[in-house]
Amino acid sequence: MRVCDCSICSKRGALIYRVAEGDFRLLTPLQELSVYRWGLFTAADYFCPVCGILPFRKPSQPTAAEREAGIRPFDGWAVNVRCLKDFDPFSVPVRQIHGSRLTIDSP
Image 1 (spheres, rainbow, N blue to C red):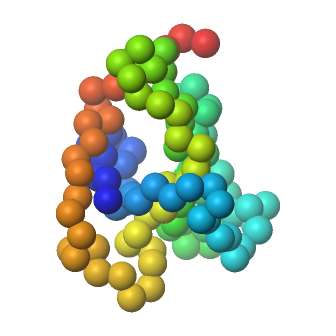
Image 2: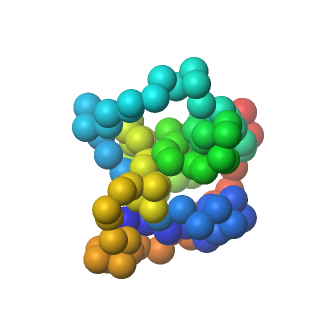
Image 3: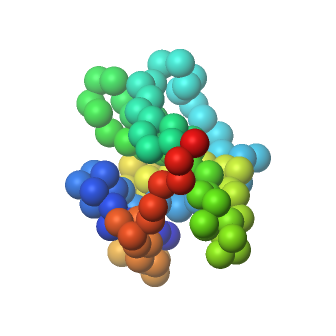
């Protein structure tokens, strides 16, 4: 599990677990959800247009500086496990991500 300290993630309180593209099963069509894009628009945050909850997102691609530092692109989904039924978020270790320290490359 990952928890990020950037301004968006810290306010939304998401606890994220990344899953590979093939392991993600969506029951609601994407077109029925709302999407928010920010930064360089490589990430997509999907949320319910009725209640506003963010159940999952498509993570952003690494910046040039991150790629130079060895961070590889992730082609999958980031699931907010706080939205999973019958899952105890306190039962798993959490890794702190310092998104507040990241910089955005210019396009």
